[in-house]
Image (cartoon, rainbow, N blue to C red; front, side, top):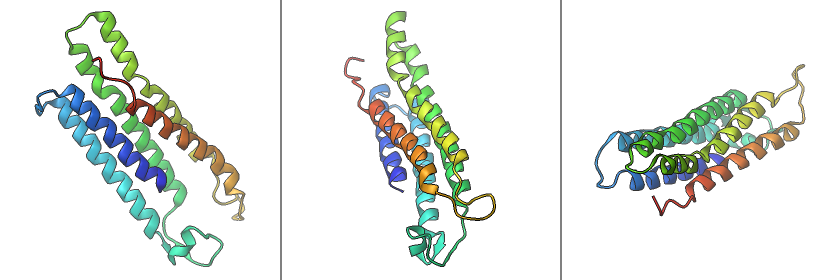
Length: 180
């Protein structure tokens, strides 16, 4: 859940910053609406994930103490995989969103390539998102025979990819765009 909250704020911050950079007179152009649409979609998905995860088990204690008796109505693995794929698609859209605007700027071709490369640092985020998707597919919540497996072992790889992705998102946000 912490990951979801962080992604809501980090991606919203990136899109707001880029709107400030690429929509100078607050025109309601394609970039503006694209950024707003992705923000709304991102916020809606992660809020839905947070609500689904917190309300999926009865009693609620089963969420953080799975050895207690209770019932969880949501397949956590499916939810995590759907979220990971959605996140990958959003990252791709965020990566591609400023490219059209950059190539329409009135500067030399080499400067356009340089600015485009700076904004393409987001490729690292996509690599981490792909790693997270892969780790989600590999993770076993329950053994093949219905028994319990060491989920913590599998979660380690998943969390490393998630933290790496969040780090890359923060790196994209903190890029120096002053000289554009």
